[in-house]
Image (cartoon, rainbow, N blue to C red; front, side, top):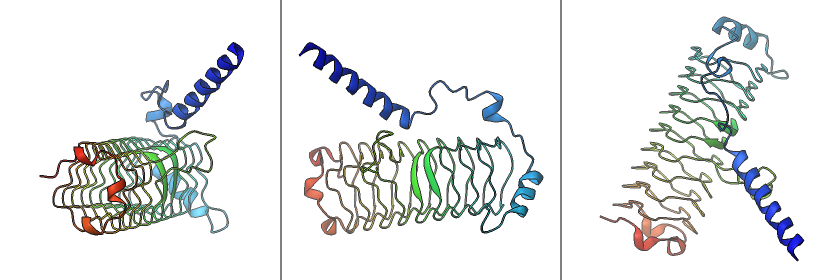
Length: 265
């Protein structure tokens, strides 16, 4: 019996460690090292790589160090940027439709007004990134966007929710803790199990969005549009839900957690 308990305890710790590693890529990483703050290519060299790309062979910039570069306005559609370092890189107005940014580093990157429609952002590190006015329609996002600025951003039809079918890497979902998402367009987006604690969602359009089991503790949803939004299991502890639009047409609001702790006025 004792051996069994020890085995179960070890298994539990292993699973916990796996879950922690899944979205804590910054642990033990020196963010000031040359690998994280320097660039091994110039803008001109990136442009040359893009010029050689074709529909069947997109530009492959996997693992490239591109931090701090000004890549504003470039057409990086369908480019492969898996595990690339783009910390503090300027990508304002860039076209990244269909790009693969899985496990990429975009800490404090500037993606203002960029287009990332249908892009893949699996386990990407995007803390404090600027995505004001960016278009991530239909994107797959399990990125850490803690403290990001996403004012007027579109994540319509995007999938930010946890994939409960494959947990080999732990609970992978978007983290938007303390992000500024005022006037966000999240129509029909999957935000199930997403961490939205203390996020600013004032005036956000959450029509038809899934907020199942989402963490909304301390979030500000003042004036948010919640028509057909699904609140089943969402944690609303200390969330501000002042003057919401369409709350009477929201789904499963009676099944949300901690409704008695909502701030309504």
